Image (cartoon, rainbow, N blue to C red; front, side):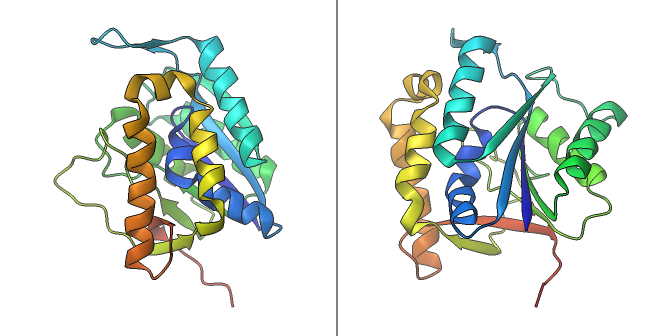
Amino acid sequence: MNYLFIGAHLDDIELAAGGTIARFNKAGHKTKMLVLSKSDYIDIYGNQRSKKIALKEGFEGARILDTTLEVLDFPTKDILFNSEVVTAIENVIFDFEADAIFTHNVNDTHQAHIATAQASIAAARYLNTIYFYEPIYPSGRAQIPFNPQVFINISEFIDIKVNSLKAHKSQYEKYKNEWIESIVARSKIRGFESNMKYAECFEVCRMELIC
């Protein structure tokens, strides 16, 4: 199977699905990460990340996960749901021969994440399987809660997930060690809910059951 993981920003995918990517790779599947922006920003709190730093960290995270990474150049905060973005994603789906995609949740609260989800669904209109990431704080604080439906056992891969996140040093310095601790804790909670040690979970947009 060919699994395409789509994110608005560098580090989004590792946060939501780093363990899943590592597990799929070990099982012999083909994986790819597609990020729609080079993820540079300056926020009102004085935090900033340059394109150079973001790209360096992103490719290091992908290396740790043993997957490929393609980065497009749409605006970091202002990714739009329009034909240009849809076509760019669709081209990658076609070239990669994706069997299924993972993307942001349509009920996220980050405008770029929402647009990425909408564009991904449109671009994957001929695919039968689409999964949504579980939103990560400070995103996802919406009135429509995340509905965990598909659980992936990442117990064997939690350290790889953590290391891929630590590769994003600019974000690690921004959020401190609590960032990592909270992600591990959430994986542990999702694991407890599914009789595993650590798990990642996803919401189904649509899914073909292959028997």
